Length: 387
Image (cartoon, rainbow, N blue to C red; front, top):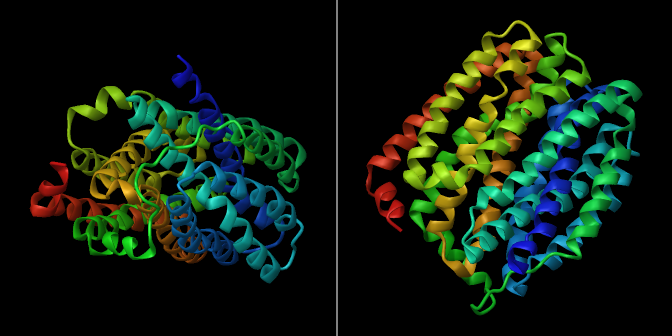
């Protein structure tokens, strides 16, 4: 039993970090609007996070592989999260918010990736389902979105720093109790990272991943503003995230049952089809209540897509480069895709409204899904799937 018990701090880290992440993801756009920024400017601030993550994800992944520790990198990043968040929330001008935001995101964005990388490895070591560990992140996200949404609806979005710091301190406390990952290979050298660039299935997979991830990240950034456009409050935004992430937690929890039946690419294509349907339905909504009712599709899209993609990437990369590979995956999924989703999404929602934004997202995921089907049909997909 002690091995299983050793997962408790990891589960609690995922719970508390994703609880902080909810506050940023769900309510930062509303907070920035309170500060007087318009949709395009909010898009710029939201794009800073993914931009910082493109540099920070591979950097912290490489440092983790080089020094053979995930725990120490997590400790540095959580300390950075606490200090930089206090400064970030003091800023008022757009330039100051952008600069401090970049520093803040440099420390915060790798935490989820390092936590998931550690969870994937610990799951493999203990022969348990990754989803049963990762679902604690979703539970933290769901709990926080509901409680903090209600809290901010009562006291005002300007006070979002306080619940953020509370969950951040909880994350710091549990990092000290984490069991680190054991790596037998020699420390990674910078030249080893070149192996990933030469890995054609990995590179092609990352490019196709972006087509689906851009729409996912645009939704992350602007669902709150879209609900507000349709007449919803902060409490409804929190409820929308709660419904979505609860369905995600259920999908993760039962990953061990559904995930082994087919190859990962099959689930990626299924998730792509569901993403397309989801965005077209959102585009047609004329009431915030419809968005909340449809949020159960979040689990069937992101939950399935993320689990299958992370598993597939793990098969494609050598063990020596697991942290680096996972954080490059994270940088593409949440970084590059997030920049494009935030900038283009901000301009679209400003100029044409939320309905047009979601229509464009629907067509983008349709193209991405067709490309994944082609990838699956050619040698790359078949060869990698057989690993």
